[in-house]
Image (cartoon, rainbow, N blue to C red; front, side, top):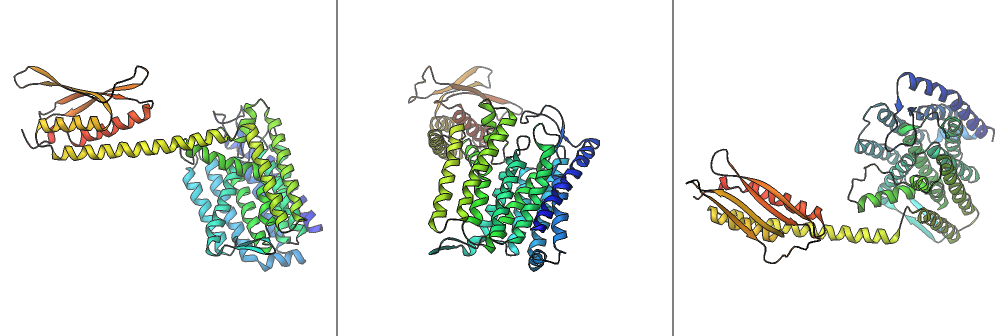
Length: 486
């Protein structure tokens, strides 16, 4: 117990000493986070606090390797795994630090790839979720599936912690609760390595929160949140390899329930809105609480209370057995989902409506592409101008256009206009429509024909825009100048 206390107090003291130095250094080097549309602070603040967390954790863990007691022996027994885990976590830290220092930051895909590489390295040394014992009579052996499952777990938790770093002290406080709960379980189950890792993190976060809690003097940045998320995720897997019971993985899920669910719902929103999974978002759980009228400090404390409640209830899993642990776990997850429902982060009806709309748009896009491909066949058979105009009219009909108009100048200087109007569509006065001029290259050198088109929006200007784009592609690929006939 003296070693545990020394690790916690040592890392906390280091964080208290190093963090002010990092604040001073960041200001001297102008490494600060400038206020913007997605930020809640109003003045530039240092955002490389992860440096203090990293430098408060690693030295304590390395020192434990040289202890001549049971804990030191336990660390030395799995030196390869510990070394790879710490090196991978250090790699993630430096990737985050580069992202914090660079003015434009790193692309989300690069950070995701770095997390994947680090997670693969951890899996390669045997730190994988190989099986989970749900009850005495039920053990889930994942076999080869342990690789993708572990990668998903590590990368998912890493990004969940990273996304929770949106308010002063939020990510640090949630991570501290998670570390404390996992450390308690590790001590209870006799997993000394896991206990030391979590206590080192907990101590560093305890010291860092003195400067990070609202109003914050420093942010942890990506170097801190990515390092925390990756270390917690990888360490929990290391814990599960020694104790394959459900609680080994369930407790971290409950302690990190807010950021995990927040990440899942953010991905669902982006999927329904047809945006990139890496697109920025300002509708996270803490943003919803702010929108409800809570102040920043109140939001953070509220999330702390919910996290402590979920983690505290999850501790009952340590004294229950078999299916009772699973029931406790599922009930707490339902409570967390209810909290998200209350603050409006998830609405079942809107989600179902969004899925239906996404399916309808997908079906509509397929029909538009089919119409484009059918029209293209007519253009390929066109040999003369009259056949070309017939192909243009056919394409307009297949793509749901209202009308076409093509002013022409004959060789004798007289003017005429070719026109086409849909017989099947009668525009509604309430329907939106697009009127676009499409330039079409003529056979006369340097001349362009101005093809005027009108497209019915049919309730969706996006669909009309896609059809116009497909039609413009036909005009570009099959213009008048490319006709072989006279």
